[in-house]
Length: 69
Length: 232
Image (cartoon, rainbow over all chains, first blue to last red; front, top):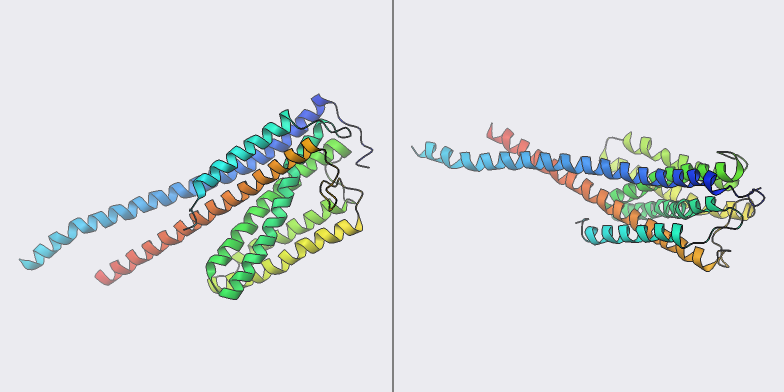
């Protein structure tokens, strides 16, 4: 069956070939976009944690001074 | 830890896939029977091979997990299976496009290679509900590994059985005698296969890096919550 099928003309075959390559590209791009969204969320959360840690470092000497006085 | 060598790997993937595309459209000759539609073959078949190998690799990582008890092997197995499912979806869609162009039908149910790939794909789709239905992480990893090993063993068995049962209804691109590809087509196919393999490994490492970063972040958050609880 497969061998007996005649070859499609270029103008008709082109859309199928383009479709297949677009599917592949779309899958890769969607995957990469999801990963990029995840990584940017991690970056945001990490900077929040960093800010909290910095605030804590700033507050610690003040707390220690209050205890001394 | 997982991100080591990720940047050069990503660069190699881009270069190889670009070279493969250039070879597909500017170097490889048109197929005498299929004509231009045969160009789908250079994306469809490497995707199928890499997806099947990814499922088998998932089973091998699962064996290592069960032998060592190290959860990082379970993570490697999960990511390999997850990526193979994505590639498998690509294989089914591009295969349907090829079938439509070649046979005039989107799907042919009496074609053993198509149906067996669909069966394998659906088998692996069960992996997600199985994995995420178990809350205890240790049990989840163990059960997932058992599934990955059983399904991973099914992949080569299924492939061999189909080849033994029906060798003439689906185009054979590679065989023990080297297949029927002329030199230019063979080179193009091999470059596309290498590109697809590199893409798989790159995305696998990228996802492992992201999962590792998420775990580290959770640990930091937990530690902070514990400290706050102690201070209060």
